[in-house]
Length: 397
Image 1 (cartoon, rainbow, N blue to C red):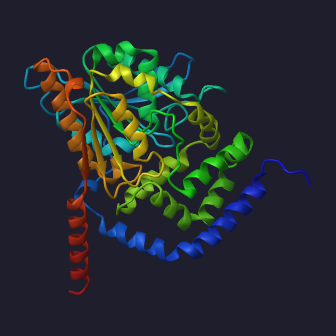
Image 2: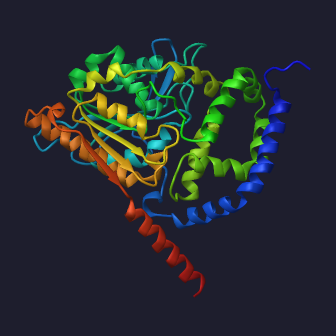
């Protein structure tokens, strides 16, 4: 029989075999992860739902309708110098949705910031794009359209995670005036400027990328048309699937609700969209575009244990943007906004405050020396241990 792309039966057999083998090898690890999830029921995760003030449909330059949510501030809306605070625009990563920012949106609006978050094309509630439209450059054009429709005036603070950070850099390449004339702060969260291979931190991540390339859109399109079959395949491999979602998204305990939200976003992404985006990662290179951020207060924030965009990617951004601050979090993976929300929120608010204070004093962020901080989230680890002790005490009462 001629060899070609796998069909649905072949994919089902492969998933089933992988599930069986993985379940045997990972059973103890899964049990340990589940126990740690229950220990991680921390106050910051009490609710993963934050209704937006309003939603807006923004039409991209090729006609794709993008879903945008707007959060109006509930805290003080002016800086210490009396200027209106910047509008914060949040761009999520590959196979996630704007839901991933729930804990940042809540903190930012309480701090007095207007927040715009959007679903990238093919993700969440945004429409799918036409063939050939799944390019980082097109995402940059989409972001430009979102800003033009929702924040046409005033200061901007742009924050991007993973592919969302790449999207900001792509917009800087095509519309540098948005950066040089309006942007006061840039948050680069677990992202890359290109020129290095992605998913080079572990076998499973690299193998997953190769699987997407090998299967291609033909199999994914078939699966998308047969959701019952896809559901049965995922159900048969649920334990391993959940373990892998957590293993390659987080490096410390998170509650089951966070794992489920992450799995919902990842597995809710159309399989053909996943496949169609893969080629753009191999050609993406926005090192030169970093020059546009030379006078923008910049935070580069990522996890030491991030296997998808490991610290080497962040180091390239730091080298390319004078005066940027690099914060490395130990015991942190790729989906860091859900894994260590309080740390990220504090650093984002600090970023914005530095940008506001620097503007008031006419300081150029590019004149500052680079700063690298390596942070161990001991507070979270301590609270997880305390939660475990309290749980054990209740069980023995």
